Length: 344
Image (cartoon, rainbow, N blue to C red; front, side, top):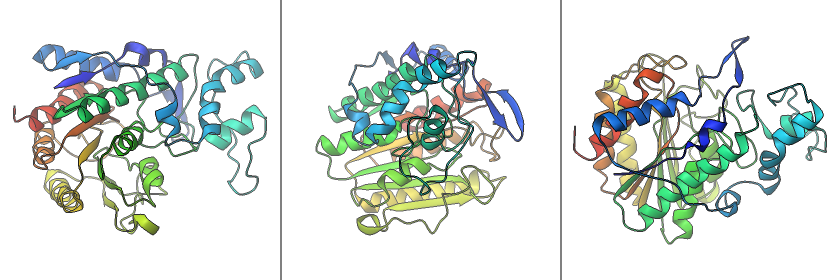
């Protein structure tokens, strides 16, 4: 399997996040990619390729132009306003509807375009964001060109990013960018399967009223888990998208028996939809030792996830999302690919 990767993600590093009232080093950090690369090297797995450059057009196909401009200017504007602050992050969150335009205030812009405190900006954040989208798009083009499957090793991740808001470590939605590119490239129908522990609220919101992209997400119950305000089972799409959004919220402690059953049902729903291509938001924070998640999957279970996905028989793009048990992330992510390729 071809694997798309760029070292540019390493520029997005060094920030902290607020977790349950305490400032801690970010769980979303460059070492996550290092461990996946180490596992790839150990196994001699796959063919590593650098991404091509696609510019802003694919990003603008799913994201608001004002939001993209904000992302491109955020750190420079923050640093010019607060030169002693090495990290830019929002500290005020205006309720949407009180004023529809963010104005020119730097704190106002940060609060308007970010929905939580886990999207910090450092000097290298925007280059990393753009390159992550290039990684996704390079994989998309290869699958569109006839590859059975490609792994886009994206960082920062993307599935929480909405059309005009970032959050949950996510700035632009790599899976959504790829799905839209498949549609524009001629795919009549596209399915997105999100197996990250946290609900892909951004992906859901982008396609919620569309009938050409089918979204399935397996995740922690939002009554207990981030992002809390999306991911309930009764969110089934709207308008032309009614019935094209399927959520499987599951409680803390979920292990393979229940997770595997939900996955099988979700895959059956995708099969019934009849897509031409599949995008997988591949998060492995469902692992039993993940520090910010509460599912109980074992490393061997990721082989089964890959096997079930392969059963669809679809051209498939894997897009990396979450997974914060750093020592195990390489084993778990690559196990999905091994299972998919029947190499378990």
